[in-house]
Image (tube, rainbow, N blue to C red; front, side, top):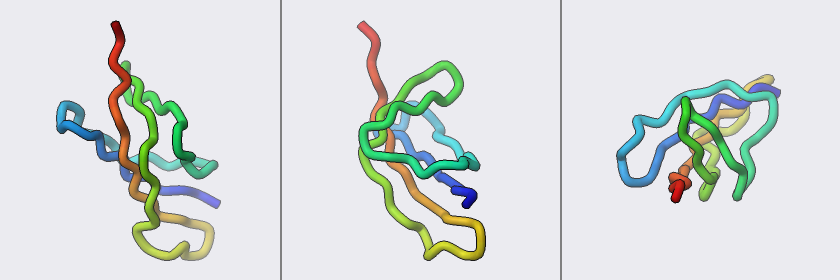
Amino acid sequence: MIYKVSYVVLGGRHPGAIVSRDTPPRLGEIVTLGEDQFEVVEVTDLIPPYGDFAYLHVTLRPILED
């Protein structure tokens, strides 16, 4: 299965991304986009899976460094 994932970052300080993955994102997972890291806080199906593809919307929370 190929997962087409639309990442949206809370707060609007990062443009997000659309990424193809071999595994589905999980709540609490840490995702790296560019040089920034984010925590997955929500995963939602955009449409039902079709063939070998699943389309997901993922909301990310920035991980702030001290």
